[in-house]
Length: 463
Image 1 (cartoon, rainbow, N blue to C red):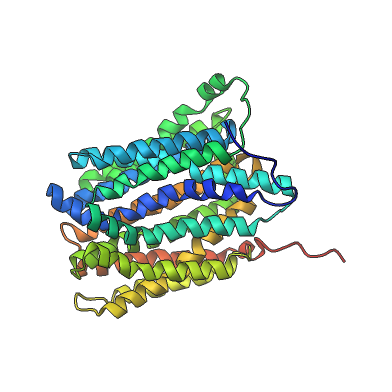
Image 2 (cartoon, one colour):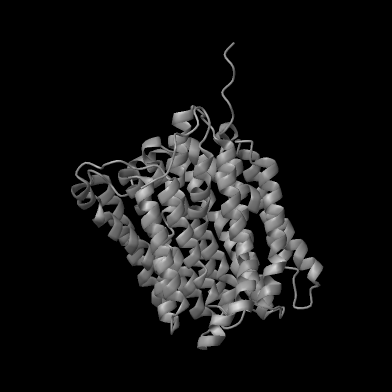
């Protein structure tokens, strides 16, 4: 049951913002809050850094699979239903993690979290599309900005919050925090979100979904992750398996009547493919910094979890300021270019960091990174809004998040490979070179795509 009154005519229904924002932040907060808990968890269970990296990668594999799947379900069954199911599942995962007796159970909890937090973002994008159609606002830039600010804020403030939670209640508190968030989300969803309406032949439509495509897509990601977590000659067979599964997936999707991911649409649309590629590269750099730099602050620099979180607070503050000042403008090209160039500068600066670097220098690096944090995600999100087919905006939004999480998987695997048992300064420098390569490629892609200059610009007035 919902207690909604009629939405205001001609204006976006602001009552939707609270559940949309809460649902959308559940995944980024769980992505980033774990950063400062990895070292305490490793100490508690006597696990090496390469093993705790699974706590990062498992969530992103689940999310990378779940985002386009749940996005497709949102398109078919409606945003309210999927929002409520996903939010409730997040609370269950929080309880499981809070009482986990081992690393293995924690990994399971993170997988459940990955699937549970998949619904918020695609549900929000579908709701925004519906409101844009109802109100006649082609570009609800203010709403898109609010959503982007919220997600990037919690992604950056997550380590700070995580540090406080670890200090107050131990690493288990970083899982338990999902319980009150889930309760609040379910209540908001029930009271505020509009009813989805009946879905004719719901059971039949659920059975007709492309579950074989889902399974093949999952096989690609799992095989790729297992290879990236241990990239050696002996594990090359996993890379081969990922390639075979990818070929089978593409063949299946091209023949499926209602494909899980419409490969034909994406292959024929270079603009949206470029958006996915930019999102992957930007996330690779961002999450390499988030996890790698944070672990180094604790292991290599000797800071406490809360102190490491406070260093990253500068990223959060600058990112918010940049998003607020630039978010109202829907144009994306300049934001992508500036964000990519600043990522290059930050990655190069990490090569100068040592175990004796003063705190002011580390805070300065964190602050400068706030510029791309405030620009890149928002610009890619706005680009997708203009490029995606309105009938499949949920699936497209989910797939955008999938590429972001693929970047997170790559960064987590890189961190595990460069650091080994300890996050030392030598490993950080190797990670910085890796980040530098990724963000240089991002800048090249932005400069090479001339069509980006027109995305988000209003059509010229007729003569």
